[in-house]
Structure formats: C-alpha cells, structure tokens
Image (tube, rainbow, N blue to C red; front, side, top):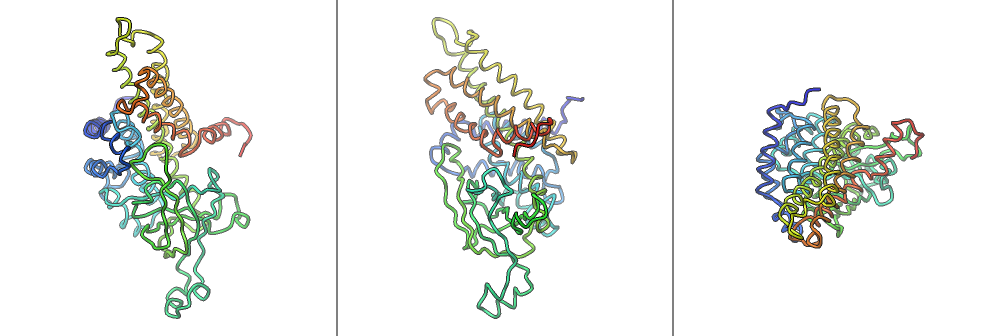
Amino acid sequence: MNFSEDPSHNLIRSTAESIAAEYGPEYWREKEEAGEFAEAFWDELAEADFHGLLIPEEYGGAEMGMQEMGLAMETLCAEGCGMAGTWYLVLTAGMAAVGIKEHGTEEQKEKYLPDIAAGKRNFSIGITEPRAGTNTLNVETRAEKDSAEETSADPAEATASADGDEYVLNGEKAWITFSDRAENMILVTRTTPREEADGRTDGISLFIIDMDDPGIEVSPIPKHAINYSKSCEVFIENVRVPEENLLGEENGGWWPLVDMLNPERIGFAAAGTGIGKLAADTAIEYANDREVFGTPIGTHQAVSFPITKPYARMETAALMRDKAAWLYDQGEDCGYETNVAKATAVEAGIEAVKQSMQAFGGWGYATEYDVERWWREINLTRLAPVTQQMAYNHISQQLGFPRSY
C-alpha cells in the first residue's frame, strides 16, 4: 500500500482548516444557541467547491470521490466545526449528488447537479418513518400512478393526466433534516405493497419532489443538539409529481438508495473521528495549561491515558474509513467496510469526547468550553444514519453469523 498523499488531498485539508479557523467553536456555539442555519458557512463551502466534490466537471463539480469528501468532513469537524463539518455536506453534496449522478436521467443531472455544486440548491432525504424506523423496507409512504377519472372532477385536468404520467404521493416522514429549508427532497416510497412485491427489496421507488408543494407540511422536532439545522416531521398529502421525477426505475429504488447510504455512513465515520479529535485536542491543550498541586494535570496518566487510548482507536478507524471510501470510489462493494468504519469511529469518538470532558472537570459542563456541546453532537452518531446495533448486525452477518433481522 502507498500512503503518500495526492497533492489534491493536501489542498483539501488546508482549505478545510482555513474554513474551520474562520467558523470555529464560538461561531457554532452561537448558531446552536440561536437555532440558526449557518448561511455564511454554507456559502463558504460552495466557494471552496466542497459542495461539488462528488459531481462531475461537466456539471460544475470537482469530480473527486468519497476519499476526498471524507477528508474534507473530518478536517472541518476536527479543526473547530464539530458535527457541522459533516452535517452541512452529507445530505446534499453527498447523498443527493450521488443518487442523481449515478441514477438520474440526463435531464435530472442538468437540472440539479450544477445548482448543488454551486451551493444554490439544498436537498433533504425522506427515508425515516415513525412506524418503519430502521426497517426501511417497511415504509408506508405510497406513490400511486394517477387515475384521472378517480382523482379529478375537471375534464380538462383529467384529459391532461389520463395517460397516467403522474404519481400521487401520500405519507409521513420523521427526522428529515433540512426539510424546513430545502428546495427538494429525494423521497423513498412504496409503489408496490410489500406483501405484493416479488422480493423483499422490490417495490421501493425514489422521487425527487419540490418542497414548496402545498401538499407538504413540515414540523420541526425539538431536539437535544445540532440546532443550527432543523430535523422535522414531514406530512405529504396528495402531492402530484410527473413521471420524470422518478429517480431510477419504478419498483427498483432499493439499490440506488443503498448507493446513497454508503456515503452517509462514510460521512458519519468522519464525524465520529473528527469530533473526537476536536474534543481531545482541546482537552490536551487544557491539560497542559491547567495546574493542580503544582503540576499540569496532563502529566498524570489518569488524565492522559483515557484520552490517548481512544485517540489511537480513532486513527485506526480513520484508516478503515479511507479504505471504505476507496472501495466506493472504485465501484466495489463496500457495505462491510462502511459499517466497520462507522461503528468503530463512533465508539472511539464517543469515548474520546467523554474522557475529554472528564479532563476539564467541572468546566467540561460549561458551555463556554464547548466540549459539552460536542458530547451532545457526537451521541447522535450512535443512532444515525444507522444504529450501532444495526451496523454490528451487518458486520456479524458478513462474518458468517446467521441473519438476525
């Protein structure tokens, strides 16, 4: 293996460091407390071409891969942005860009990808539902081909849609980030009921929908952290979309969705190590300055070792994330690697933040030192985009254990 870095990686790292220096912990503390979206940071990511990292040059992007995106995310997180370093990139620049690039029509690519690359279009991803939870195959949001005679009393409207080139969408989603401000959503639906589908992964379809449709209602969910963006319930009632808004094939949306989920897991692995390193580096600086009984507290192994151990594990997890990203960029199967990277990065990062808070003592509980906020942020990674339990379920199955779900 060759561990020498491509010059472009050095550029991405230095650019991310510069952005994080401008939008550091105090900035995010203010945005969190105010519950405000970080418009200036979003625009800065566009200026740096980070929104377009995964988008081909012909659509205004940088035509790079998940290795570069993971590096950008981890560096932003570690150098001062905390969870925002992943949060503001993973959905639109990551999942939506990948889904449209890999499975969209030429018309969809031309319509959406240049705007994504320029930071002019924000996407939310409509997967999670209150009753389906982690089992995405159980989504109940329905997309039904329009029956003009049944849905329209207007003869002109019935004639216009009589060829069945529209779908009618109905359902409910939960925990949909950016849905309060996004222009579009990639919505996961069922076009064939599960009990009628040929296989367990059949019958899923993806649609690109406009969020300003009057049939869409968005309700933010009060939450523990990451309040510089809203996560919402989304209610969809009789939303009509043309057939051209189908992303991929009807009833064949499962595998395009999987293609979008692997970048999300790589992104959250970057968040786990990035937030963990940010907290650890902040605690190390504090441990060198803070003196008790005439000596810096960092001289005591009871302070240094609890941070050093998870730091070593984070370094290892970052290597697995890089491997997963490399496999993804080569078009290879990487489900095992993305789950290993996410699970290990999250556990190591959580332990690093926990022990960093401990190193601060009582001041670790104070908002002015930010570590308590990073603790709140990193704990989300245990639950999303896939729970630790489900990540280990996937890993166990790959190791040869019988399927448990």
